[in-house]
Length: 475
Image (cartoon, rainbow, N blue to C red; front, side, top):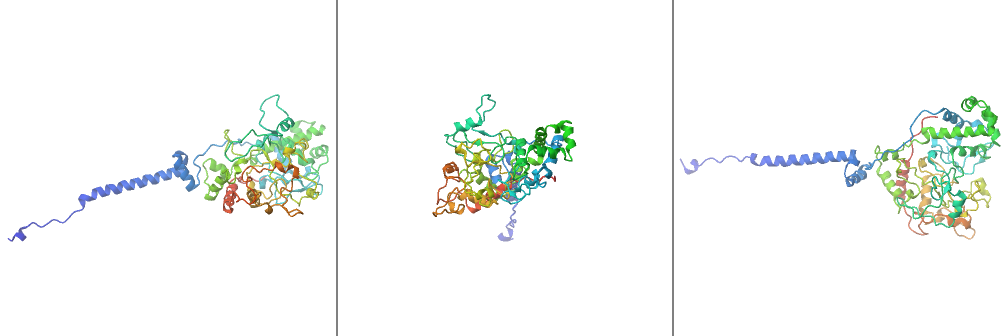
């Protein structure tokens, strides 16, 4: 046998010795991937339970709120007998002189209890042909509106100064700057609270009186006239059941109780304060914002951009109540004069808000001339008329005004006979110093770059739409 033939035949190579470590590596990698995917899924589902940095990533990617809260809401219960009567009164057009206008005519439940159309102001009066003075604000969420005051809350102090004394003391106090997410730079000494655009009513009951006797609204000539209508209404029996058989003997008391019933309806019926917007659900971790909505929220809260949250507070309070998107204070914004309003045909007429003409107690407190209540932005994108004089009819125009009022005023104000821009033309020159030029974005100067781009404004408007409540059940 040859040496070659005698040599053993070499065995074929086998991978078995190297396969085991490779499989272990693959299994480990797969386990890591599965764990990572599981953690990502968990983080996406429960962003509040993961480290803050991870929660921020989840928010950026999915629009989830990594810091959900529990919001406090009023308990829902059947309407009391008083509120049921108030509901009948709210929808009754026969309480007007024309017989065609009820509370709901200007405060439509299908339009967030605001105006049902895009008119600058609503029409009323005996023949429903007279222009109102101002656009009706929404009636939603007014149960939280504080009473009108000047400066900080005096609390339970029995010796608290009167509002007039507060105003006099605040005459030379510099208004604090409002910055989104920041504290005021001084004690607030500006008007705050109250109902109507000028705060002249403190309660929903007082507010309900206003339209009844306004000659360009429901146009009743006296309380007695209203009392007679209530006495002859189909629901008159409810008055005697609730207030006694002699309720119609005292006409002032009759109307006072009717207005109280309307106020109870507004407080008790959940359609006036549902807190069921997408933003409310997002705050509670039950909804995701789109990328545009999330970016809009951040711009809304950015003190160097929109700075909206400087006046329209966007975070829940320590009491757990949902944010109202207002600080309840008053601002002079200098919106352009609306020449379509009948009252403005008189060049000497000026609606100056807190200091007149529809309230007279502050006519001498000229530091407040031109100031109007900061409204809530809840349901604002459902409105088709904005500001106290109804000058704008969509959010695009409102945002453009905020963004470029100072940088390009020629877009908003007319030119005078001398060719110069007649800036703040709805406020007499001696009161124009009251106009806000310190809070962003109003701190820009002529020719400066606006605070926001067109794309940023679109995202802010997308966020504002998340403040719309779901439509109420049919009334």
